Image 1 (cartoon, protein in one colour):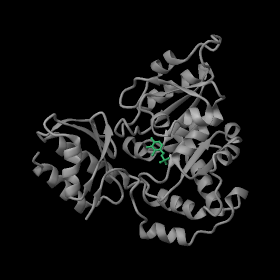
Image 2 (cartoon, rainbow, N blue to C red):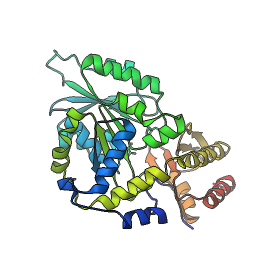
Image 3 (tube, helix red, strand yellow):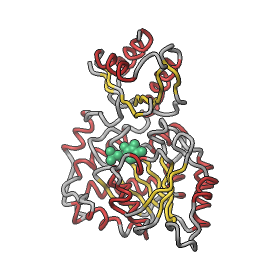
Image 4 (cartoon, rainbow, N blue to C red):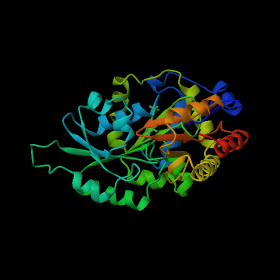
Length: 341
Ligand SMILES: *Cc1c(COP(=O)(O)O)cnc(C)c1O
């Protein structure tokens, strides 16, 4: 039994999802003739109360397309210093859009309206880059699955409105936030200009993200996706997995959250642990005490067929998911309780 807790992307197809894929009706999506992709896009736009949606192969591409659609080369976006768009998309912000990032020293990957306001360059001061976009992440990845207070997002929207800035949400794990905070997708659709959502994280599909947005800006989406190489053909097979996941794998995210909070509580009791970040959703971030190195700890776990990930700067990360069973959970907690450095 291998217990893989590196990410919620390591899940395999469930029989139900396999069935949905096999039975999908497909067509050429570059011609917009794939009925299953069209159905998925319509389902998500209705869910979020957005005008339009477009299927992408990855979350990175959906974010990168959104940034391209919102900006011109030379401009600047505002994001937290831990933002995925800045740290984990291969430098795509500058490569694809010629845009720089003003990084904010936020709290667990989350920024405030006051911080956004302070970071906007005066538009008539031509020495500095023109600020045109704010990117938020919910839940935050590097911030340990933290969820925004929705009232802060509303305040950020007001700042964006008064300065004419676009507002994009990297919602790779928005599902976890919705379940943890009992919010609705429509709350988010009302606030953001564009939202990217992942089907391949907590929801457990093999691939796929969807970019949602308001009509005007989404007019550019098909072309930008094509430029990035993301126009796909009979991809309805993967859209079918997405539809199945939205219908069947959303509510169960609460189980992932419960298991993560139990892991978090167990870690917090151990003498070899220095600190565990607050655990709100399915990500547990923690630090070891000086007496034990990350390499040794990860290696000792690996000997017991347990995989977790290192995030640098002493951070270790555990992510719970669809394929992390009750049996695995029990065994893992036992191993943590009995671990000798
Ligand atoms: C996983 C993730 C993405 C998208 O990643 P891909 O691997 O390109 O699908 C985007 N943002 C965040 C916060 C993520 O965790």
